[in-house]
View 1 (cartoon, rainbow, N blue to C red):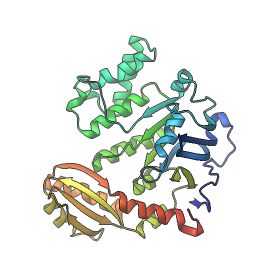
View 2: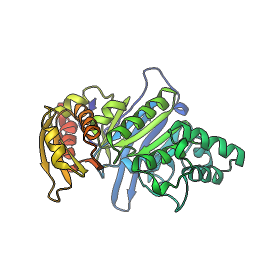
View 3: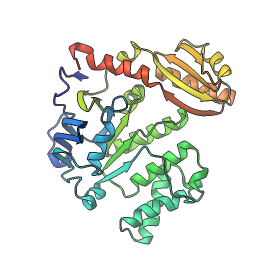
View 4: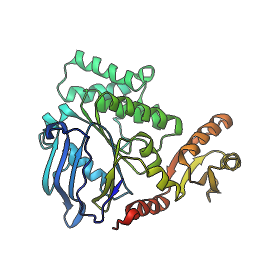
Length: 333
């Protein structure tokens, strides 16, 4: 990974062979300000097919960059092109791009199939074509058996798959995903990551925001590291794992029997520290080997039949890791 010495540096994520700009997602000197508040500043990027992860703490500019790419925001300055199309052309950009936001909101009483079909009908697809496209999308995310149940009865992982199915139903070339793994249990995360890789291997462009570094390492072809609205580093993912292992990350697991979970986790060397939350319904765990830890966690959950409410990294510890990555190799903020 290349770390830039200044937050105003240009970053480029590009394939080895020359590719024309209408086959890339291009940001050229793009800035977005909300009044006097900086969203992103002087971003220069070229994103190729495959999985590109936008990585950074909350407030670093990831969602702003995605909203600019999808046309939900207009840049204060600069030019954006998505495979030769401006995000300011809504009908044209819809043909090429699918968007899965981080917001978990559905129409009251809607089934998974109805949610996807309504989205397609709004954009002008005929009834028969809508039904076929919705069915294909549901098959792709393994939700056919639950397609006619109300989304309100779904688990968080199933609701995430419904939103993903909606975003790919019209067969776009570009898929923009804002924190798509947030809150999912380990098994659901593995299933979604496997689907992302299948889509990327089929030639799709996936732009994914995340602040879970080891998952970025697992699934990404390239990484764009953001901090305070600037692109500060970019490149492939080799070496990110070693940097993470220098600084333990802390994870909060909320479940029905945190004491049981803590006892089992302490049997394995991937656990550095474990501490019960004050409300006795959660467990703080530190690990230097997140891949091994998540595999172990999934095994323990299954063996002990634990009821997991949520699994999430703790931002204070993540910020320390980002600071280390940003300033490594002589770079500075």
